[in-house]
Length: 162
Image 1 (cartoon, rainbow, N blue to C red):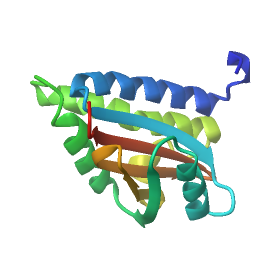
Image 2 (image 1 turned 90 degrees about the horizontal axis):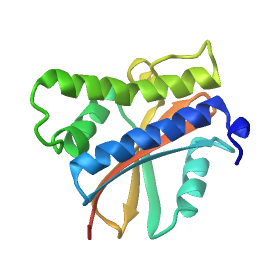
Image 3 (image 1 turned 30 degrees about the vertical axis):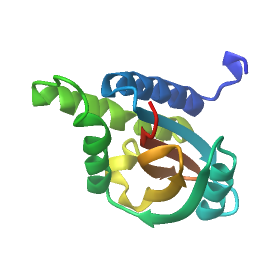
Image 4 (image 1 turned 45 degrees about the horizontal axis):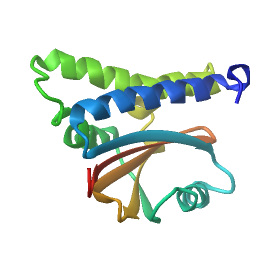
């Protein structure tokens, strides 16, 4: 794919993946952090099931539940922020959390410049926890932020073998 053919929201998604990859290195080899995006086709559940069926490996979509931002903050703490070595001053955690959350805003405003800048924190109707089973992870969490007809899925997992 040529760089001039990449849409703005896709560019922000690529940047978000790089950010997650850097955080993953600090968390340790057993951790896996990634994000992806896709358009909603028939409905959200159909689109998630289709997306998960295309993943490499043993991934099985089970269910989806609407959650609140506070639930996602707990997952971020559990899978990322508690794992970061010597984070020291709490302001570093807040700074990292802001950058993490800001990527959803960048993707949202790239899709619709008049859209919600912070869909993860401001639009509680569009956040979902997705139950996906995988033999690849000891423990994992997946959540979705729906931005109009586009979905950003973020995954955090602890690998069975690092």
